[in-house]
Length: 266
Ligand SMILES: *[C@@H]1O[C@H](CO)[C@@H](O)[C@H](O)[C@H]1NC(C)=O
Ligand SMILES: *[C@@H]1O[C@H](CO)[C@@H](O)[C@H](O)[C@H]1NC(C)=O
Image (cartoon, rainbow, N blue to C red; front, top):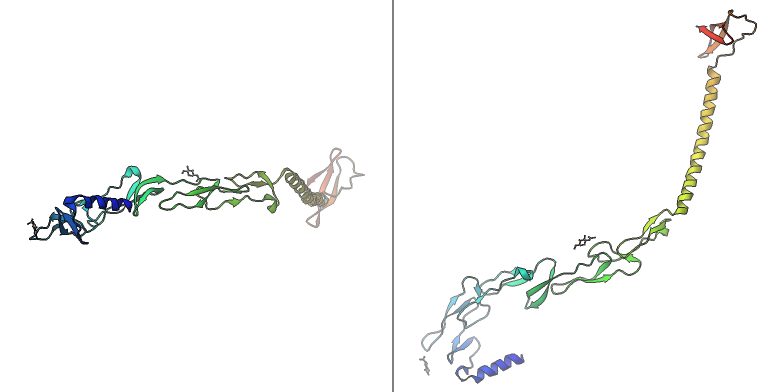
């Protein structure tokens, strides 16, 4: 404001330019001429006989205000080196508007236009985003308070560590700011579990064993041929004995061979 005023004073102080023109006019050679519209420039200044002659801006140029310029302004270039990108293309009535590429914010912002960008901070695991960045500001990260963690980049929240005791387990790995606590069955729990398992196994095996023993015994009883009455038989003598088979008794020949009685055939 002050500077503009000073400049104004200096201009006024210069005798040859000491002309105050009405709005929409500009001073040239001590005379006031009508301005050209935005998108145009002066081709020929006005004189006592004709008004200002204007022509449109061409190529990569523009004028964004009523003006008395002899040349249109050159469109701004969004420098990739400064991570700038074109946000709004230059038109004859408006300059280019530069913005920042993805992952960057504007460090030097004037009139909705950016001059220079800076890489955004990534809040790493162990931190949360306490204040998300804007066009002109970086992300603000905050360390996860004790007892909480965040495992991903750009976490919005810090999650409390899992309380293992709540699920009847014990903590086998302490939580950090970047990782959850690890739960597991403790050594006591493992022993208790093993003993319980063993008891259950034994309890299951007892009836099975009993059943198997009983079946085996029954089978033997059922299929063991009745001890033939061999007493009184001389060696080589034959006898008919009744052997129960499938509930019916059939006769088979028994011959006393050696000391053991043998089944000869049916
Ligand atoms: C324009 O007319 C003014 C008087 O109205 C005169 O003083 C001035 O010299 C003239 N300028 C030219 C360029 O003819
Ligand atoms: C976080 O981002 C960095 C790169 O910005 C990457 O190397 C890393 O693997 C990421 N970590 C996780 C947990 O996503």
